[in-house]
Image (cartoon, rainbow, N blue to C red; front, side, top):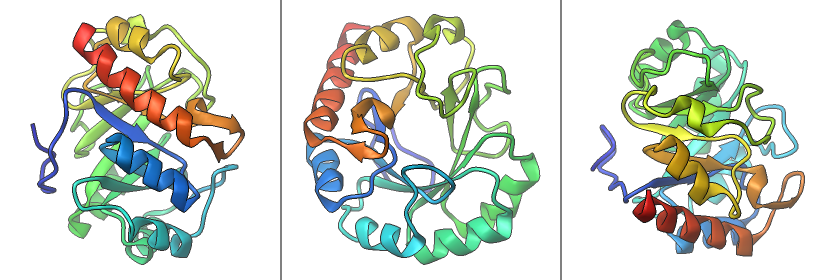
Length: 212
């Protein structure tokens, strides 16, 4: 399975590690086999600058998707930051209108839409390439009823919200997602990632996929 326009291979369960800020954690995610790495360029304890994202993305091999994450910025702001950071994808988190995705389409980057489980769950409904289905309080990192979305999302969609190495296998079994996305679940403090947790999450997610 491949991501449209990127030539990137998708494993049994697509795994995205988000909110990375340190070279060592980026390296750990790549070595563990993550398919995508997210850099937060919006208000968050995990926020980094576009320049910092560029430095981190430069060390990521081409088969791993690098993603700039935004929430509430204008299309012009997102365009400028995405180009400066040199990422291969842009993630719009929250209530971004369809027009924001349309405005970024010409960049030729993979577009990711992330929102709560109550949003439109059809991947591609906003012309995005990938969809992230998050908790009722998106970005909270709180576990929720993952089984509630089983069979509802369409297309290439990732499950997010409260996932960590201890529960990701169960979440995959309950929701049957195309992929999973984690941030706070591989941290030892807000914004502070742990290489061991990153490696464990990827390994368990892939093992959980085989059992689902």
